[in-house]
Amino acid sequence: MLSGVGKLGKEGLRRWRGLKSLVHDAVDATTDLVELGHESTARNVTAVTDQVPPLRRPARVIDEVRRLGTRGVLGTVKLVNRTVEAVTDVALDAVEGTAEDRVIEALPMRSDTTSSGAWVADAALGLVNAAVGDHLGARRNGLDLDMAFRIGDRYVALDRETLAAQLDAPSPKVALFVHGLGTTEWSWCLEAEAYHGDPSTCFGVLMARDLGYTPVFLRYNTGRRVSQNGRRLAELLEQLVDAYPVPIDDLTILGHSMGGLVTRSACHYGVEAGFAWPARVRRVFYLGSPHQGAPLAKLGHALTDVLDAVDLPGTKVVARILANRSDGIKDLRLGSVIDEDWLGPPPEVASDAPLLPHASHYFVSATITENPDHAVGQLIGDLLVRIPSASGPLKRESHFVIDTRRYGGVMHHQLQNHPAVYAQIREACAED
Image (cartoon, rainbow, N blue to C red; front, side):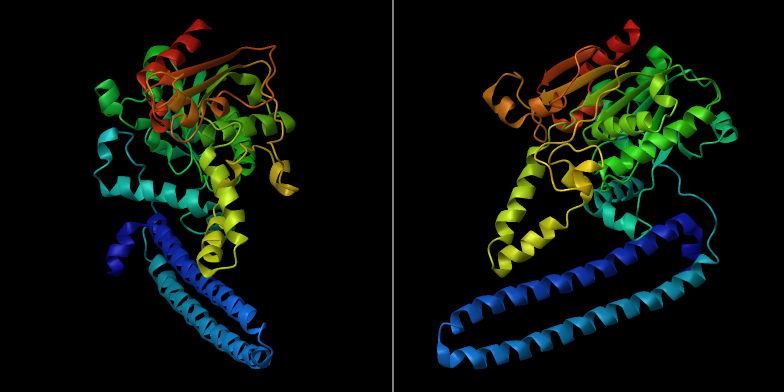
């Protein structure tokens, strides 16, 4: 067994360690939920016995004994849980010393990999990061998807030597792809074979072939705050521009869903920091991005408040679970892209983050109905984002190019590789 772990490599072992830690955290969280349910039940019982004077005092004494016993049992569960974690950490430390120092290979960017174990693992990582990514980051858990750029089949270090070795013919035109919530960079390959007749064809491949762009894919933890990811992306883009083998004179960014918000945030913080890269941005495509919030995120916020107001175990426990949804998901309620929206009191609408004035901005929305004007399509949009929200933030300057288009019969995830959307991208990039 130890030799098998050794063959896994240190990066794979780091992920297994992260999974183990997440399970132990889940055990602690579950015991907290059990205690929450017990306390809610007890409050309802004492609310009744308090109305009967002869029962009030004995019922309170019994409840206090019950509370001490419950906390003792649950505290023991937590102690055993963390003791087991400590023991397994010692064993893993010993194994790590014999593990090979190599990085797990990136999942091939092909739509026909969905039956492989590697694809399942990558998809699971994306989902786990969406759900509890803020927790993973705070705990430095091995499952945390640290932000990285992918070029070709590798995640690259941002230095001249590495980039020069990875790029045979670097183009002065770079296309950056920023994925959405609960996914990884692989999601840009969705339905590639069905749409293009080739499982390896995605917007990056097409833009390289037709327009001469070098495609770069971002990988990041979607459970973190949008503004935290935006600030980090701004820093990495500055490093990319500095280390890129040739001067970049055209940076085109394509953000899907949450990726569009992260892009807006990065542009905001890039300008604020005085970085050089924002001036290289020629156009930005926002594909189904919830600039004014997403309905499901709004519903989750409202439902949390409603359930928490009802003092019953079945409502309190569910409310606590909903309240612990990741910060990234919470940001989708309003489409928040800057720190001010979460550092202070919760706002009613997202704070303004002006778009880059020198760039062209393309807002793309979709509806599940063939006719975008159909009542159902207007009501639910692409299932996750409605047309008004995908059409841009409430405040939009009018002194530069803004293009808003709608596509009927297209679902949210399909915007990432749909031929009609690529036709718009190709047309816009070719015009310049």
